[in-house]
Length: 77
Image (cartoon, rainbow, N blue to C red; front, top):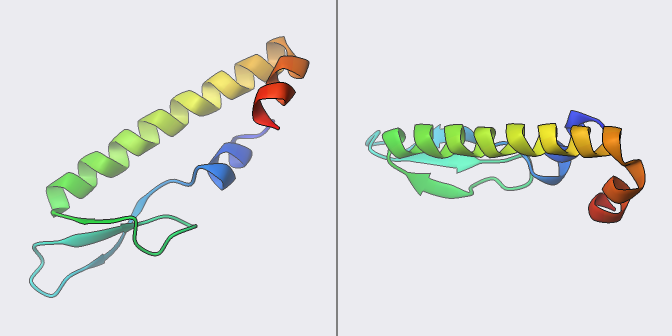
């Protein structure tokens, strides 16, 4: 199990573009051009929260694979 496998399945978010009036930004992932259009301050929180969840999922997946590979395979695959 590698970290990239989690990120391929559940990609991280990033700021994709700013609207002309700069009041809104688009949030995207590698799978979707626009996941959401939000105020810049909400984009920061959305991206930060998504990263925290993915970081935790990576740690859980790596630990489960280390402890019980067969259980991990049943869940992941």
